[in-house]
Image: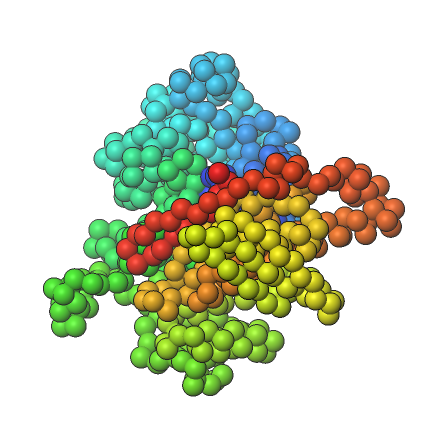
Length: 553
């Protein structure tokens, strides 16, 4: 009989720590709900003591998610553990995950303590955590490079103190699969009370072996796997949940394990992560990349037509990427559109149906055929929309290789049209400068990404923008067959979020909120240097995906 494997998702903690993947509270809540829909067993919602924002997001996720265990990471320190408990105690199933380094390298150079001191602190803090919460997970950091006898003694001690889950991390991705499997087996056979706890594995991908090491750990007796969506995380990342679970599903002959995760939600979850963070999924990414189920070679195509199993070891449907013979175009009706969105896993309200169908018709007028990837892009750009403070009325751009680009942009606010003309080194930059002149609010363009959503000459262009001011960082997304229009849509989505925050702070200041008032008074325009820094566009073409980045020169 297949043994159950618990999936511990740390996208919102380890994954979110990676550069470029930070999320705000609303985005974390949205992603946590999708992880719940995906069916993970545990959501590590964050590191509560790291910042007030982390504490608030962990607390909010603990209150919102009811079908999963919600965990907060903490160092083996009383103040960390108390903070973690305060953040997760409202969860239906709370967990405190505490850790301390166990390798001699970390003990000597980072913690400046002996093995005995680390042992005593770990046992003491696990006991303290157990007095607050029933579900305690303990991690000996850098376990893969720790002395095995000391590791066994430490694990035995924390289990006696009340730890129910022992996580064995390959913190720096140093282990080889056979070596890591032997470590788990060693613990299983040399820790007397190991039967009182679940062994978990947390593998990093520095040598590209995170999934392989995780599978080796499961084979050796671990029954919880710690992963992230698309393998994001510190440095080279973590074990990718979609790769791990589909490896188990595909090779049942080797891995007789059961899990509650719904693999049909994997594609949607990965797309949501990309949408929220603005980081594109590599086309050759295993399982969920654009090329994972694409075949160009004539030999491969011939084999696929004869029998899909010749070149596909899993079906697109198994990860939620639906195949269909229904062709959508400008003559398609709303019923067919809604049916296709339902097939893709989206349930639309009447209001959202009306908006997305209108967007679909606009795109269909410009494209002969709408693909599933076009529909997913429309859905992601249309949901969780920014407030409609400024709206695009029209824009006109003049540009060429022998002239300075000029943009005339007209925006609407409260029914009033406002126009500005700007010149710059490129058409997108000229449009962005015109928007800045209209809104009278300085911002810095932190990131600009342009990529083709689909193939061919009439492909939709998807633009992801990240801007910042003295209040925070704001993201926007735009989709259009016209890349300048998509750029304007994404910028306005980010700008409207920025204006909403600034105006809310101003209103709170006027109403007597002293803390907000201080923030409002402390706000100053960005420097002229920051406002006028020149921009350039660099582009690369990878397969069928075009990606461009606009950055400060």
